[in-house]
Image 1: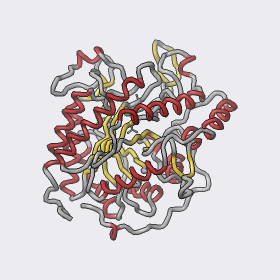
Image 2: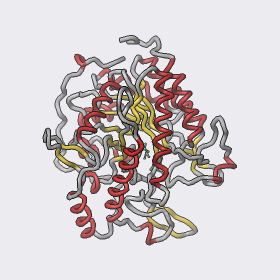
Image 3: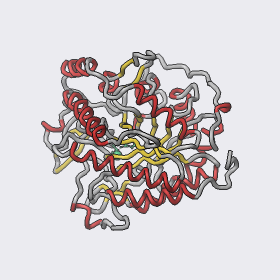
Image 4: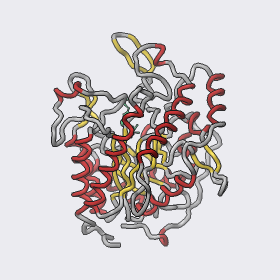
Length: 416
Ligand SMILES: O=C[C@H](O)[C@H](O)COP(=O)(O)O
Ligand SMILES: C=C(OP(=O)(O)O)C(=O)O
Ligand SMILES: [Mn+2]
């Protein structure tokens, strides 16, 4: 069901706690003086994205919230500062654009291409430390924090990496801009997004729009809050509540409808379509049990949140050899269930959030040119989670085109 403007009513802002809980998943910066110097430096740098571009994405997402477009977010799990990182940018953009184009044709709707790019340098982790051969070191938390090598030097958080992340983001944005066609006619512009995890970085990059005085996160067009940091009374949600950007929230299978209602109350109190995106990542085995109640309760509350499916993060498994992988079969099953659930409820299945690359990596199992478990170590290069390779991403695009192309089902408000 598409949310009509008439259905959008303001709600009372929830009371803000006097003392917010400590921010989850922050690095243990060893040198606070250096941290202060870096954040001071970041505060003096220009914003990475322009508020008018962020506002434009928000308008396009409002169309999606009304059922007139879809969102496609895609890119690496973790961008890196590696020597070949910038060289990979055009292929990732091309894969996201091609995937969007295939889905758009099947769904007969515009698909907004948004990269997990130009800022995706910080990772939440399941465990604070990693043990190898009896040695324990801090976990890798993204190139904006520490390095992947299993050495004390690399794994010690270094706040100056946040400045490097800023400059890599700027170069990535320049690379994307150089590749973009002229934006005439209906060519959807390419926007960028990342997880707003590192609050020292994000707070230092908030800028007021000189035209309107409104505060924007200038680190990217769209930000999202991860499954591990989405407490409605937590510091990440409080940060996102204070900026105008479109904001996503990852929603795992243990989330409750009350949590989602609380998140909608804090992040989108004025119920403005295009502001809030719930990115559900349930796992193929749990989505049918969990998602319908969440969607119906949130929708019944009058929230115009856009619903997007991340079929990656609920479907991670580890092989007998200890390799983190995902099966294309599970990913496809979660996408199919997502679309079917929304069709049954008469709500709008608003798009996809994928971890993918433009290269021929062997990180996920399956696909029409199948990667087998035995192939995984042939070209397994991710710094964190397993990504779809280009062919697997296109396989999924054709499946999505088919699923979305079936049109609204016989839900209670189909055709509304
Ligand atoms: O990308 C998402 C998370 O950072 C990632 O899935 C965490 O992985 P871990 O469970 O290996 O820490
Ligand atoms: C950390 C991520 O996901 P989630 O918060 O859903 O686990 C991610 O998108 O890389
Ligand atoms: Mn990931």
